[in-house]
Amino acid sequence: MRVKEYIGKEIFKKYGIEIPKSFLVTKDTNLESLKFDFEELVLKAQVLFGNRMKNNLIIFSNKQNFFKDINTLFSKGIKEILVEERIYFEKEFYLAVFLDTYERKLKVLFSEKGGIDVSEASELNFNNANEKIKEIAKKLLKIAIDYDAELVEINPLVLSKNSYIALDSKIIIDNNSLYKHKDIKIEIENEIERIAFENGISFVDLNGSIGIVGVGAGLTMATMDFFTDVAFFMDIGGGALAEKIKVALKIIKMRKPKKVIFNIFGGITRCDEVAKAIVEEKLNIPIFIRISGTNEEIAKKILKENGIEVFDSLEEIIRTYL
Image (cartoon, rainbow, N blue to C red; front, top):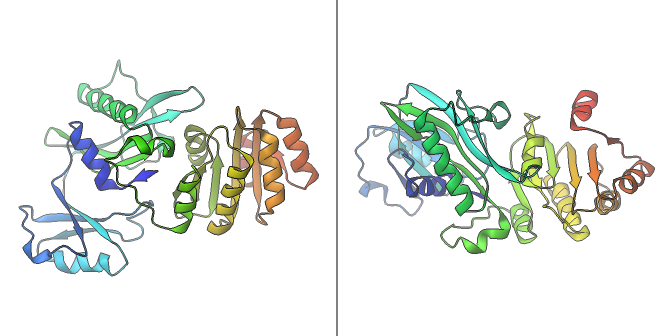
């Protein structure tokens, strides 16, 4: 489950990572009573999908235009708005911790450029890294461990007047561990997310046209990194049973992407179960599948017999069709 930005930043602050001055506004907030000491503001809609800037859900404002701009966001159906002091900075970076399910360990990713996709970052070399960056990276690792997170991301992390400040937060927590984290507010914004959550499926909605389905957070995110037009990414989890896979396919039908890419590595998950479910569900949209692991030959046979092409690698899918 992805938590909203303001919750992620509260966690950052708790672990000693600097964030901008801020406060949360809802429709029930008495705006006239608000007092704050910063002139320039950033108003950020608290939603669980990306591309907020492109969707005009982030507004650079000031005290004079505060009420008008707040109401502009509320008029779009936004329920919560994070109001922050605008930070001017000299440099921006990308810093994240993610769970690599291939190697079964947490990895730290870093880039000298902020605002990038995760695919453009590389693993942080702690021997050569700036001491401040290393310190923040260690705090992100601690957060990931303490909160059973699949991803903890600051994008961008900025350098402003000799201080490193997290201007954004993205934290995705393993659904199966939410019962341990009573301090995390569980928010489900639509029917698709509710179905995914109730069935132990990690689902993150985006704004593109390609659906990404994988087994394990690391594999799913690695697949997503190849594409810029992602509609959603969905992790059905290791050991996924046939019924759970059918729920994932139901979600795909509800979300209606233009095409779907399956990147399945069946360690515990049986590939033939995945194949049977895909065939039975009849998605009626272009399907691109890379599948390997337990019973993969049986799975490939099932798919090919039903007219579904199977690929040996993700690169082959990209090269051939996308």
